[in-house]
Length: 109
Length: 117
Image 1: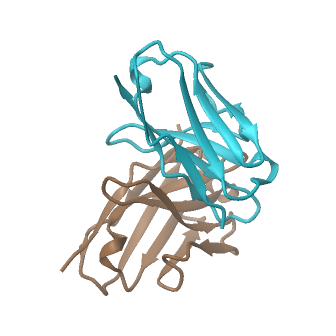
Image 2 (image 1 turned 90 degrees about the horizontal axis):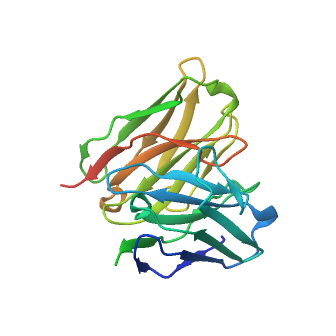
């Protein structure tokens, strides 16, 4: 089973700053089947990025994903007030044994 | 617009059973794979079960294997999770989610299951 480790656990930043979130896999993620989700308090998760770098429908271009193999990054270029939330990475693929990382909370500094 | 609506969450005693339902609408349900994902209070997301589009292939996380059963009825546009032999650690909000070309691109609002004596 692939274990995903997200860092940092909490990121304290101000609106307008750049956020860089890391997701490291215990083994190589096949064909970049790596996704990122955003979850706000009391809400369901929302798909942001899939295929490591493809933005989902309706996601602003300030969100970008990069990486391959075992190291992946979610970057928010300029934090908007609505971006303060918890972010999860997830691996998926042909095995259909999905796993999520533990999450990174982006909080207002 | 795509809708997934979970129901069936309740307070259940350890060792008891519960059946969750997820009703889908505004998309062609029968061509999408579906999963159940849960989130314990204050914790992260845990995928627990998957069913393919025609219901012939299922997968489970080790934490629920042998106790939970996923199924679907494409005629009713619904996916189900039968939960047996529940434990206190099964307490969580349970979400259903759709998977197509993109992973988990739509989620329901969740239904709360509490396992307690």
